[in-house]
Length: 161
Image (cartoon, rainbow, N blue to C red):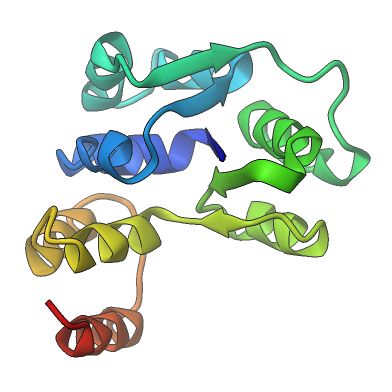
């Protein structure tokens, strides 16, 4: 399976110091050139830039020749990640958080997971502490409702060890 990421998930995980779950959950992560550039842009978080410089599990690929028309309203990283995912749609998982991008992915029937889903999966596998990671995430600009957090916490209590 090809795991493709948009900038948002990489940034969130880097900011909460949980980027180490990516190679454990997904192996190698593919990013388009546009995503890579966003990760290193002047306004990008320092933790994200550091992660990008040291992530041996990260694979850069060229942007698709053209982005899908459905992605015209998105930023270049999201548009290229979705368009590349579409080319790999039979064997891929896309890491994406943005609500508009997720709607487009759902319309295209692309398999997606976001930051919170990755944290949940990692916690279920014992790779990190759910509450600690969510607490760190809530101290960033990332927004998640307490209802969702509590629902996921309940699901973790019923997962057999």
